[in-house]
Length: 64
Image (tube, rainbow, N blue to C red):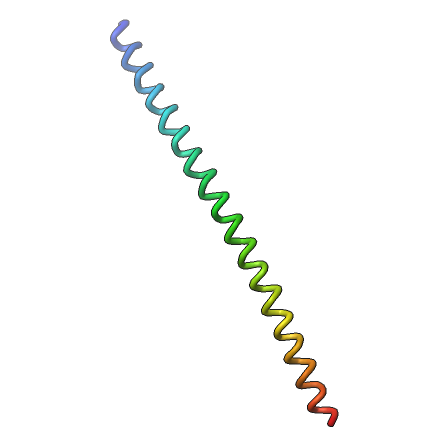
């Protein structure tokens, strides 16, 4: 009986260790994705500004 409890405790400890490692990996992945999201958002803002400038230029050409 004590051997069964020891084995179950060992399995539980291993599961907790794996869960902790998974949590660390997920936190790192989350941080990386947040950084990428910030970069994509900045690229989007720049692209929209360029499109707005182009549209203004086109509107000027149509008026002339």
